[in-house]
Image 1: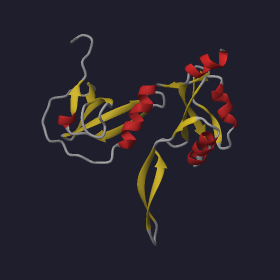
Image 2 (image 1 turned 180 degrees about the vertical axis):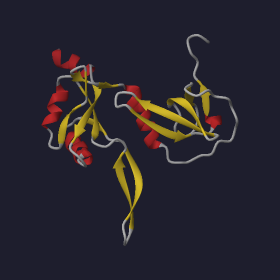
Image 3 (image 1 turned 120 degrees about the horizontal axis):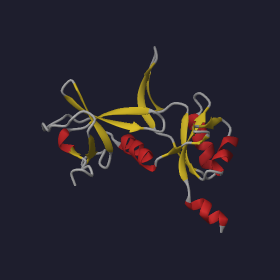
Length: 178
């Protein structure tokens, strides 16, 4: 019975890795049966004799693991891990919404240009309603006339800029306007 309740209370945690060990740690954690996630971005590396498309971690030195608070320390026995992100002395929980936003960002494959003018205020909460980033909750930022969405991954103190057409975005309703 105790094991069942521990399985129900699984959360996402950010596991710190040794430098450049993220992919191996992901593989080892997955082999051990953990639900692990590593957001990767494709980049072109240029050497003097060739170009190559490589996949690099979006957030270096971190892998995300969905597990129980007690099992999170067992993941640190995995070769290549260096610790767990902590908040007030305890393993810091990464919200499901933040992982979901990262997954939406990583699934986006196309660059799109703004097509419609809508007024958004800087810092205003918005939701993407169409396109590859549909379902993404973010904050609006206007930069040199282009519309950008900033997705805050608060647990890691990181932000990511994504170009979204204004017609794909709607203002989120706040409790005051409902």
